[in-house]
Image (cartoon, rainbow, N blue to C red; front, top):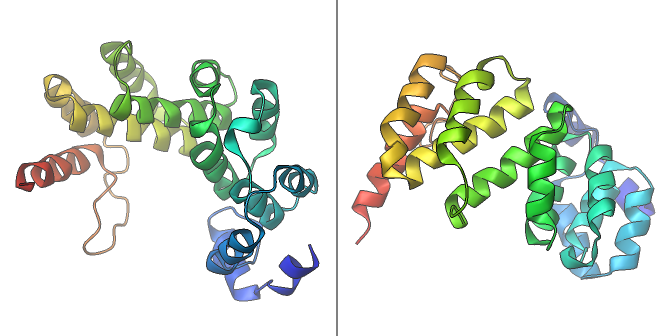
Length: 215
């Protein structure tokens, strides 16, 4: 904790706070700390228990994803209120945990939109990697009915799922693009030159174009 405190940078904190994150540690330096520590599950739990955002990010990086129980991960996610901790927990731990599918189903239907966004992030992952058994038409129905008015983080996760359905499943591409065009979610999102827009129709078309260029 002392080492993390010493790495605190006011400029980094100012940038992070614009994105809703309450820490001032450069992520490269934070990753270097975690790389030196290597996997230490008990230390990870102790760091998580501090409630400090920088400490929790290190905790995630030194965790053994399969060591967490279902209820433990559920409790952790509900306490992961800053975007970076939430994102890293889902991507670096939950996706590699044997309870991921069970949590995906439970979280997707949760009334808390931040929790639900984790479920949709896991669903987008399944759309790409293990779509068998998913009701893609049903998912598109929900996105069409609910994404426009969803809170930011849930909206972002639903939009990612919409895009991945359009990219990975040609039979649903036309409808996916149509939903994106009608709802116009993230249509005006500022995108740096050379980066792909998160607006679903643009995202889908660009990724399909790139796939067509592969040898």
